[in-house]
Length: 383
Image (cartoon, rainbow, N blue to C red; front, side, top):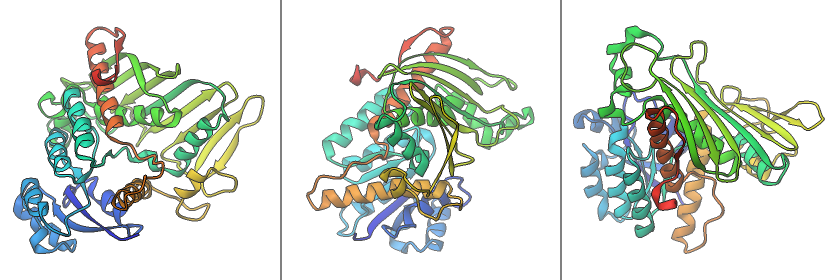
């Protein structure tokens, strides 16, 4: 496959997510980092881009300059990753999609449901791919879970339990820490804090594994530290499109939890359990049988799990390699479109997934304000 030109917006020096994207995009040699607008400070962004090997002419001061500079280049970027603060995702993503440039947007895709619907329409109108970085869906054994559910190993899925609970915002002394404070400020974070930041990953994971989307939900939000306006803990009950019940817990005050992403699936014929901090093992308990440990890279896994596994059995695979699987999915889809061919089936999360997740976050905030009333979790355009 011909190497594709890749651009990055945000993810500059000191960024939490930037290194994972740079590693993920380049591990397989499918993308070359050709352009970047990496920092809110134009001079800092240009300087850091040069240290990453980006040519001076394509080390841009901001995303608008980048869009203008790439627009008419014969070697313009094939994919841009938007790794900027949440409130900027919509404007940047829409602008590049409208230009026909494929986008991988960090979550949440947008701040509002209306913006999310506009992104879906823009992508459909331009023919460009719009993907959303629910990167945990790239883990090999997560994909094996989905394959097991899809081929009927668990029978009808009765219940899915998803959680993303950490304790890194439990210290009230962090009230004025800018890295924490913005997450609980409605002007910067929107209608939700921990549900939009972490719970959205747990929700997508549940939806991805069982192949169902949220239809209605009931939520309880709590602000447990200091005088935070937005929630730092949430419990959400959901009814999914295939009839499955989903229980979701997300928290930023769960001391003792580090990353805390876990999903459990319970069906008529068996149950599965996977935790992101132990990504090489998947627990499988068949009805009437003993619990088995399925090892990543081991024998008799699904083709999807084998394709997403990159190092030999027994060695740890981490988040950048999960991201790499999404970038490989995108490279394959982009190459197929270039060749005028139908793209193979992809499990990369797309704009529709991003929209459904944003709609569920807004529905959860609405429900919490109404003391847990059940509300419709679907975006209006999919009702």
